[in-house]
Length: 418
Image 1 (cartoon, rainbow, N blue to C red):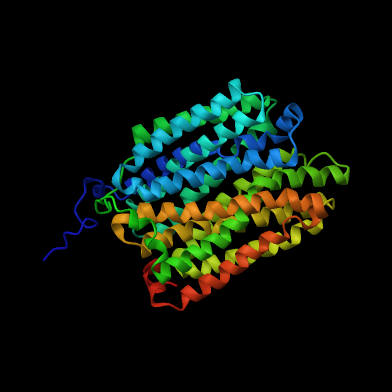
Image 2: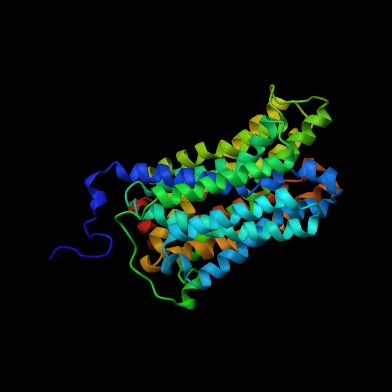
């Protein structure tokens, strides 16, 4: 009898195999614009610090507030199975629109830290509706080449996170206008989602509300080890993204120079973060061809090494500092999409959205501690040792993925490629 499972039912989109790549382009552009909200306040921290006389804790708080909001949003979303019960594109569009409003309100009306923190938390909650649902939509278009497709999508997220650094470094816009530019991009994202983004032919089975599914990801050993690998990766990723711009600016100042090969430090930070999009693509290709655990272990090993080494270049030759930072920017994100891809391959089909959401929820919860840790370490021992503690995460992640590699579950990954 012909297979009539939900993933095999004929769908008109199958008439054009190229449709899935066009769908991925639309979804990636929407994700790029929406995620420009994430580090919009972080990119203008120098201006905010001066105008609002922020302490180190206030500066860290503005960055962490988004993470806290994201944790709240993903937790509520996972407990309510929202990405599996409601259309993901609707969640994405609403989230991008509300996030744009919250970010715009900060730009237009806020003059001190307290309301800014509230609005950044709201922005983070909205990011929870723009990130995991996009991964689920992508998975409805791709069964083959899913690692590459996920890599491209997360690459768009990476570039989007870096956009505020580019706006600040390449223009003379004041901080308020920089935030407004990010809000306008998020509005454009909402339009793209509503007009151009659709679910693909490999839709997941419909789900019913089941609060127990939020914890199911930790009850199965293969999924649990995948999550542990992801948590080690996340311990390093967002603190690196949050503070690399400040590190580059402080390093060049100590050196007595003004730029990195003609680039403003903010533009250099944009390059370091945005080039991670290339790492995402390469990671997807390698993961699909040679295996998920192979790629994630290699990427975490290299990024952890960069975390240990880059501090020794502080105040040194700008070319050396930038080179290690670029390598770090490529490797620190190259594995991210593959952890999410592994979850789509190992979890129950009806609750893929919930599994992705709870994975990101716990991962981002860890980043609150590691982001906060960096300025504390800087105040104690300086930038030379600030990033060393981040190396612990990827090395523990390597151990988790090594254990997964030895399990039968690993044969479900990348069509049997471990």
